[in-house]
Length: 533
Image 1 (tube, one colour):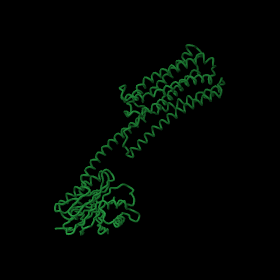
Image 2: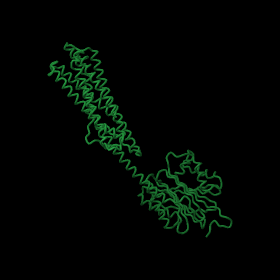
Image 3: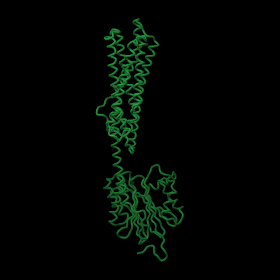
Image 4: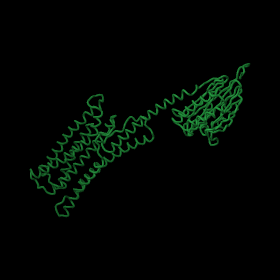
């Protein structure tokens, strides 16, 4: 950390000595003998004396920070103190260089005019004062820009208090001062040259003026470019942070933006850090809520395998996110019958998951009230309407199985009807009805199907069907029927589910919940009735 700064400090001192004495020779026409009579020794001695003092100050301010970064467990200082020292040092160095330049220039000309009496206090002395002040400002900006650039990597090593210092300053006056100092430093030699030509006084050579002006212009441009690129880098970092917030990409953002300046850029970085911290906290709270909702949903879902009197059911559910909007249930009713339900809630995310949970609980309540599948859906529709306020819609398919009589009573509310697979031949009965919650007084009818030994009922949601869509088959239902018809005989429910997965056309454009229920009525051994009662 210290070595690059010290090297730059003494290099700047050497450049200042050479430039100021070269200016006196090239522009003012001073002789080498005159320069080495007083000017060179005073300028060199003063610049290197100040360089030594600034060296000592730099070591005093930054050596503890360097020790802290090398061994964070040391108690030399806190992270806050290290952070503040790194951000304040460039401004402290700027003030020190500027104060020294002003004092040194005034002292030099005071001794030159009033102590040694080398020349009177005239317009030449005033011009020198102006040039030297502009040069001092330029050097101060150069050193501040270099310090900011060299210390920036060490700021990135700090996890830091990423809040702005209590006292901030605008970068506008700083940039304006850079511009004015650079213009003055560049313009004074040619202006003085033109003035002497017009007044027919002795003037330096045009080559000398051009060299000094171009050198000054190069230095000023270099300082301006250094500030510009540093400023652009800061803005790009801020833009990237804002884009991540827009994308809601807050995971892994524990590393905050380093605040390397005490101006508007630093304040903006602090605001973005605060927003990222808040977003990360809200994201963590949301994830905790989603984890809780997911555990509640898992408790509501039935086991993957269930067996009822004469019927076994396989349930497969895959949620696209932590919580889903699909639901299914397998319930043994008090009168010995069984209820199979599958459905979907409009929308996605937490609100859809909450509505799904409420619908599942309401369905169980209505099933306890008895009645056929159509009656249960009609009562459930009124409850969903009240719960969702007419803005939440639920598609639902409900099958009530009476194994004692070999009957299935089915009612649908906007949900795809199940496919009956008998003897390897699939058959789908379309039942059209409004989703639950669309109309408060909607009535739902039911159909009855006779079930034989060896039959299968396959229930699925629209998310499952999306994997079979094509241009020729918009909803994917026909592709599912063809896949079932082509399935080898004798497959278990698990093997049939794998077969259907292997026959999917392609993944849908967006991730969706997928739910599949397969109800089996297996063959019984000879002499054992499939249905009894």
